[in-house]
Amino acid sequence: MEINTVGVIGLGYIGLPTAAILASKDVKVIGVDVKPSNIEAINRGDVPFVEPDLATYVAGAVQQGTLRATDTPEPADAFIIAVPTPFQGDHEPDLSYIESAAKAVAPQLQGGELLILESTSPPGATRKMAEWVLEARPDLSLDGADGRPQIHVAHCPERVLPGRVMIELVTNDRIVGGLTPEAAQMAKDLYAVFCQGEILLTDAVTAEMAKLVENSFRDVNIAFANELSLIADKLDIDVWELIRLANHHPRVNILQPGPGVGGHCIAVDPWFIVDADPEQARLIRTAREVNDSKPQWVIDQVVAAVQGIEAPTIAALGLAFKADIDDLRESPARRIVADLADRLPHAQIVVVEPHIETLPPELANRRNIRLDNLAEASKAADVTVVLVDHTEFKERLGAGELSGTDIIDTRGIAR
Ligand code: SAJ
Image (tube, rainbow, N blue to C red; front, top):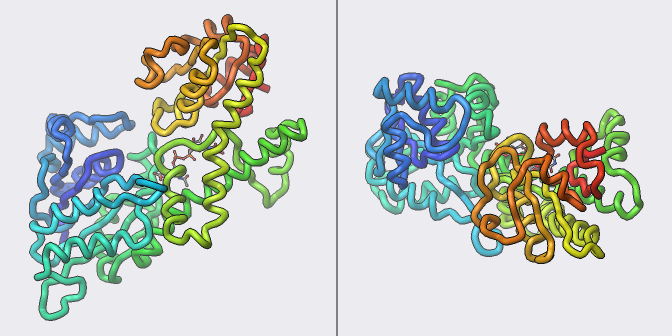
């Protein structure tokens, strides 16, 4: 079946770029979002968040008439579901957004359509999505049984890096897992419209796990580096020198320790594997725990460093979840600053974050936290804690700035 019209459900960090790139290839795209301000912005040709080059694609597609945003799904040949999958309770996946999307799409189906789940999902979520659709539409089927028209369901996880989305959508290889081989092949044909990477076919659960495993691999390896940083501190050796030396071995490649793991993927996805098999996923769970406990260790180090100083000033360098971005969501640095302000009410905390103009809500209006530049922070600080390895910090600390203060360096840039 030829796919001329695609409904994209969820116009966020993944849905909107996917919608825009398909529309740029002359596919008619109907984008669906629950947020009226997003719909209005997109229909004006604007993008409601920052992602390089995306604005050009969206403005072009809206002007060409190939992309339109609305609040309810409409009939289409294929649907791509790109909604959030956060966790709830004790790190259990929350599939309620997928369920709502499935129920919203179901009334639009006639049979023959392709449904793709793009959201990062726990194993079994694609089948669950199909079940929600078929509950609402018992007249349809996955296999054509009893003469009921078929729908084709596949999982195609996104793997693009924020900041490089428009490039990586085209160049990355993709994994496509079908509930049936036919569904996988149909999804491959659709992605081939814009994806120049290899498109690899498998079943839906393997595709779900592949995405989770990629991020867990990284989490486990960062946890190894973070654990080494604690051991090195006990032994009074430099963990960065240790890792640099060990990495000279041809088959060793240790990642970097830090103040903890931030972002909305690596700190979340491994829990989906733990939830799927709590008994066996021991290493994956421990890695999460090691990485999640690192911010507390950093806080304890700062508290120890200011002991005995009557009214200490602490310079906190960086709030973003990683270097050279302005994204503060799920950032360990943010948690460390907030907790320090609670633990040390008599201290002044000067936050330096060159990528923002105002502090996030939970840090703003706190008597003992202020945002300032590096020069001012450097003048005032008794103790400096490096939380993000922004290029600007690397250059200026490398040039000896802040060398007069006691430095707790969670990123290894002040040496
Ligand atoms: N970090 C360290 N030490 C390191 C590397 C990273 O502490 O050696 C920390 C970072 O500071 C940050 C966190 O880990 O707080 C995550 O950063 P990241 O750059 O490793 O990854 P993300 O979250 O920006 O994007 C990841 C990518 N996944 C992989 O590299 C396997 C991306 O390709 C995925 O598309 C994305 O997750 C996602 O959406 O799942």
